[in-house]
Length: 114
Image 1 (cartoon, rainbow, N blue to C red):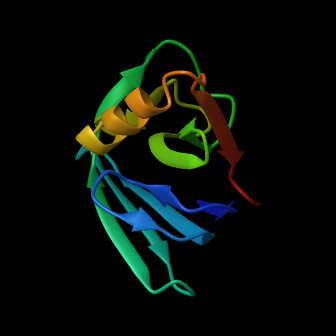
Image 2: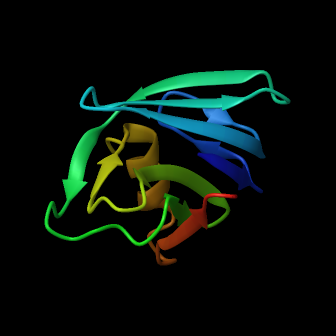
């Protein structure tokens, strides 16, 4: 899956720059790999399953939580699957959400490029 992410974002373990990312899900392991060759970035993330096994997914997408101008990768979804891979909410995201509590959280969805 290839995504153009137009903003800096956090995965919980690292802050990643905007760029074109290849996203790979390692089936049944709960692991996601993010790679941006132009950014010289390669990150592995452990996730947990979320969603509904009986509902097919609409599109391959990345979902971000946005607090003010700060983005956190929240989940990765694949077309045809109602089950996504969610990242654990980190202490940094909790603190950012608390500081931004006067402004609502926004969910930003990016759909894979073809």
